[in-house]
Length: 248
Image 1 (cartoon, helix red, strand yellow):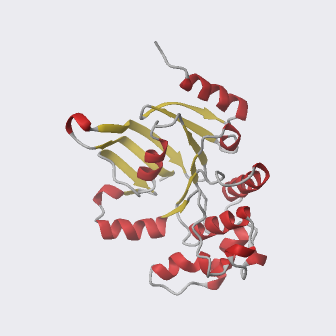
Image 2 (cartoon, rainbow, N blue to C red):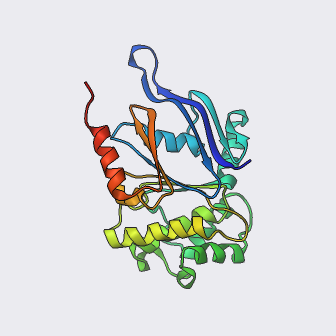
């Protein structure tokens, strides 16, 4: 299995009857292992819903989601929770670090929540992957915004997930710090740890951010309407401009 994520005829609706809202329509896409994919689209296009379904945070109304070869439709809620904990990592725009814990303790938290004793070497390796091994004893208040987001990435990596999902990870950062964070994500894909390939799937609204990816998927009205391989910020911006222009 060479796909980290595969979406087959994926659809998602909210509500029922006349009030039903379709967020995703017949999405077919494969995301290879060791790839960096950005998801873009106008406001309300369904990109956040796509990310949540692909990350097993929300169940689709129909279709299939396979993560590292596992069809999540066959999992109970308990099994799904355990699967997410072990096989996916998620990074939000907000860092969501516990202020009373050190960076090392924040990174170890998912392992503790799973009822296991964290392996310190694994925690330190996760911090080293994002360049913060020397900040292990620092609390969030002692770290910059970019460093806090890198701790959040290390926390998502500590269980060695099949896929790292990121929802607007640079949204709360300034341009310079955001670029540094994207370089960290790029390095995770290009220089994987000894235990295997890292796959990143990221939602963004910024063409400059999307240009760090290998591939950009474009959504409009809940449908996949195109893609760019080896994107540049100019090409992404042009495509987004096209999507923003209403068709007659």
